[in-house]
Length: 318
Image 1: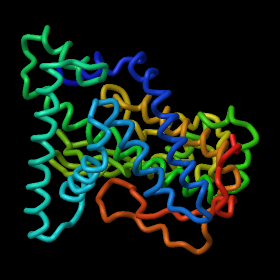
Image 2: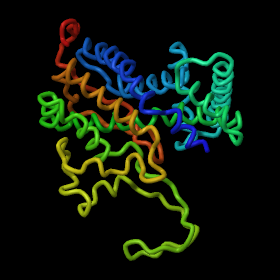
Image 3: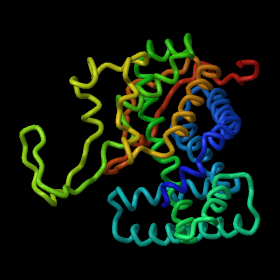
């Protein structure tokens, strides 16, 4: 019922209405980056853009966005990282504040609906007898994280490889029609989530290996994306690759990520805006691409670039 509710509220109309907001946010962030000689695309773009987009979708006040983003970061560290015991307690208390915030947000919009996803969700749930109020809070709480953290990872790792192949980046600058397919290749080449944990329900044989019932598995999407039987020359990064969209970064079938259209739109707008404002962007040489310690999320700690503007303002760049 909860997945159906999200699908009912996260309509193509709702996503399309986000585009002007996304373009405004992306332009503001990239203009700030363009005004610097050297910048970090993680803290300056890949972290805030999806977070601000997701929080705007939910209707969180803009003044709270940075606070909620911090909560989300800590929540991922607790779930998938290796925090010391004392920090686990501290983060658990933070997550309680996060839950209470989502609960209060739902209550506010129940009393005074607005033009956002959460209000649409509340309206839908009002006509569903099996839907409990707790379900509303659960959905908002889940989307507050799921709506952006994996997109942050996709942007960071994707930009690392795209800018690590300057010829591919310049192809996009010269031909913006390649950008949608470039998004798919970024998602295929180094997915934001390496895989998902699963437990086998029965004994099964895969590739000549017998896996017993009850086995704990990590299904590695990243390995599947480099399968030469599925992708020709899979270790080559190619923004014009045919069939790039066949990746599993958003899952598949009944488990397909509900937010995939929004994530794709965010990444497309990001690349279009970068091509407009910082077409000469380059990776800083000899940097370490450190991943935030984590079981499945591929979040870079930093992604340092030179902008090609030498500190000049971006006035008139468009």
